[in-house]
Every structure is written in C-alpha cells, then in structure tokens.
Image (tube, rainbow, N blue to C red; front, side, top):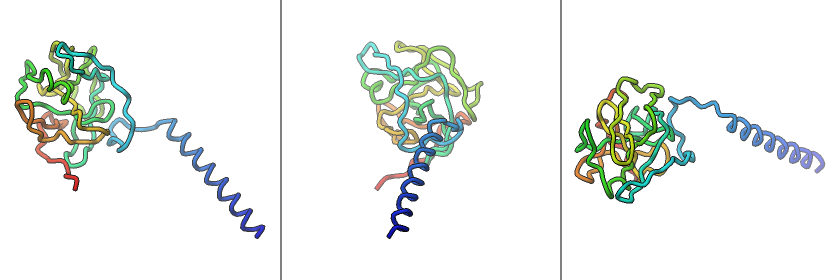
Length: 185
C-alpha cells in the first residue's frame, strides 16, 4: 500500500512538471511563419475601421503570409492565419464590395506598405485606395477575409457566390485556387 501511495505522488508530480514545461515552452513561441495555422488558435484581434456605410472593415498587420490550408493547397493568409479571398467582379483598379458586402467580406486594409511573409512574392504585393483606407492586392487581386471563417485555417469562403461574384482564395503563384475545401458532414 505504501508503494502505491509513493507511485501516485511520483506520477502526479511528474504530470505537473510536464504540464508546467509545456506551458513554458508554448509561451516562449518558436513558431515559423510558413507553418500552417493551428486549428483552434486564438487570433490577435485586428484593428477595425467603420466605413461610410456603417460596416466594419479589418485593418490588418501589413504582413501577408502563406500556409497550407486544408483542401486548398498553399494560399495567402493574413498575419492571424485567416484565408484571404478575391471577389471575381473586382478589377485591378477598384472594388465593387460595398455596404453589406464589407460586413461579410472585410477588405484587408493596412497602414503603410504590405510586407511579404515566407513564400509570398514581394513583387505581387500592391494596394488600391478605397473610402475605408488602403486595401492590399496580390498580382492585382484585391484581398478580403470572410466573416464565416471563425478560426485560422478555415476556408468556408472558397467558391461562395455572393455580392455579384465568386469568392476564391489566392495561391502564392498569384492565381485563383481552383480547389474546393473539404465538406463537413
């Protein structure tokens, strides 16, 4: 009986030490910017701007990254790990996403110049001016987040038809992803 009690104290102490070490290691970071987004991770809250129509637009970090997104391959993501999309009816010179569209599909707005993360081509990054601020483009594709993507790595906006066009993720090669995200049962 004494041996069992000693073993339990040892096991509980060891488990506690492992948990403390895991918390310490995760707090120290060490992630790579090219690694895929972690499911369930809590994103950093972005700064928001209220548009003239009253909709909210996202003012993101200037960093545009890439990641392997389930079902899509390697596509563009924002600094928080959210998939970025393009509206097919937008042009290289402007966006048709206004009003309610901005609530469902917040444009990627920045202050300053966009910065390329691992795998992102610097020469493809650009911007356009819109009433809400400066929107990031990639190979002349305007970039947006989808309000239906709740966690980093979601791709629920892929191939959605709404607000006058088709929404599609952008690959690091600067083309529209033709892949479809996995369906959930």
